[in-house]
Amino acid sequence: MPNIKSAIKRVKVNEKANAANTQAKSAMRTTVKKAENAVAAKAENTQELLQAAYKSLDKAASKGLIHKNAAARKKSRLAKKA
Image (tube, rainbow, N blue to C red; front, side, top):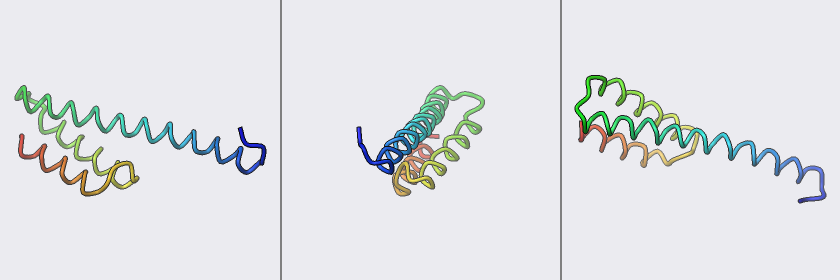
């Protein structure tokens, strides 16, 4: 544990940001998986789930959780499956 006040604060801030990023990335993965499963099962709500997956991928890319090209690649592959 650091002794300097600013370093202590930095540790706290980093832990908070890490938790938020982990949660957001996990939510993104969940929406993408739901969309993939819906496409595979040819479910009725496939279009809605694809839209949600696109939105979560764009959001993750804008926040820097994943690279913008990675988001574009995942969206393209989802669209190709659908």
